[in-house]
Length: 441
Figure 1 (tube, one colour):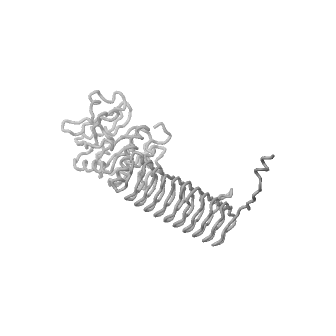
Figure 2: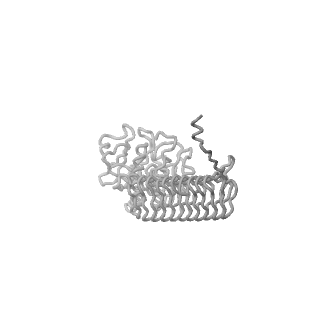
Figure 3: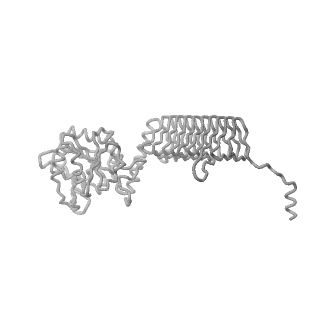
């Protein structure tokens, strides 16, 4: 990966890579999930609650990794082994392997697939009866013969074992290969030597076990995962006008009959209700959107937008912004850590920061709530049914009462009582014949 970040912590559509197979295992019904980490325990704090951690102190191969988890293995239960770098594996694939293993009665069942280009994968060598005889690794020159390299059926790195069978076979692993490592597939011939059978379970979807070893492959699996996510939403009743330019991360939720326009990015823990219109050219991050909301060409992060509200075009809603029902944040409006009451409007060219706006209020063009005094943030309070004129600046802390007005171009530094008109500007003076006098000079 050419990265200081561990491979399995590289994000794919809002989730670290390692979480994809973990969640697939849990959705498939795994009773316990154990993750093998390195000695620096870089996965601490990333794994979901309830996931157990085992430590492989040296990188001595997949067999050694599983040996690091032997204290977590129940001899009386089936054990499935997944790779942390196969983010496209699904609960259905995991369930299918578990069921095939149970049906076969084998000591081990290997998930396999056939590839037109099997380069880099371990080849599956079958016995005469169709069972798996062994897996030949191809990581280094000399690991496999020419005949073995011609085999197209490959090991996916996904296995099911009987717990006791796996524990017994792990003790017999040897590192007599070009890499000097303990390979987990080498338990297959060991099991056969003890008269136990090894079955194969072909997977028909070759994308399900695609691994990630570099940034190119990371982009490939991200594209496939994005397509799956978009299709899931469309099948659930969401209209995505152009799936090719729509990026929806894994944990986003969208209600039915919502329309997603092109070039829209929905990220993090974003939740969108029904009958909304989002986009085009819109980004939502960790934002909660209720029903029948319209957001046009805007950037919204950490905000809450209630039913029937309108955002944009070209609005910027920052963390803590809360638009109540039927509120509006219009063109070139920035709102941060503020409440905009039901039916209130901030139509254009305004900055609203650390402010509480009541219901039915109209904020004129070019208004600013000056919330920072050079030391700390201060709040502005604007009541119900207030009408502020253009180019009004509110110097916090300041309060404007219900039904009040402000004059255009005012800098409001004192509270405005309910129903009053607040004006704070110099009187205009006109100098007659100024242009003529200037030209004479």
